[in-house]
Length: 250
Image (cartoon, rainbow, N blue to C red):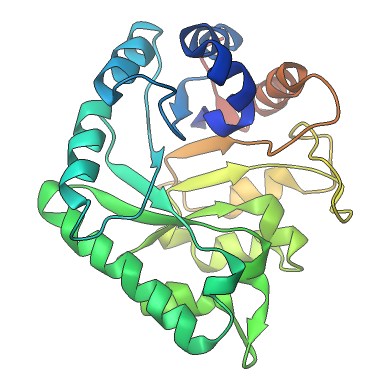
């Protein structure tokens, strides 16, 4: 079983009010790690200390992709966090043609090249528009082909929402998926997400399709939720642990 982390975007409202208390609550639930998405006024090193003191890790960080202008800052932040992975993404207007997809892939490839001497890696988080087609090809396939040094943090819900099969996609690219964004819901248009295990996705089959020698973390994320977000965060954790799909600290 792989350790379970929480993407902190999930609890962004609580984090904006009291970030240390939010981290404590995530740890109390049993999560083994957190994936950062901003630092809420703290320095990366301070965040790292808080997370470590709570018995958790930071497997990855959502931030701006490395460029020649910001690469030193990205390296500095990742080093302070104690993490080796930075993850970015693209909006739908950046991926409307094959040429634009190739340009986006080049951006990630350059970022990966800048990080490589430091032992750091660069990845992409998808939404549903990467599973639309341009000139008969999936945007996701173009990006993966054109940026071979990029890893994929596959968001399984948005993959399914985009009409692709996350079990098939995970299996096809399992050598390049060290992180899975484990997310669930009804797949209805504009519907809020549901706690992992409460929606229509076959979470066990998706996780089983990954390469156990490559996959390192399961990262729970809910973009939004109709009820109490903390209840969904706890329910997602319990589902993964109680069904032997992931490992926690409780």
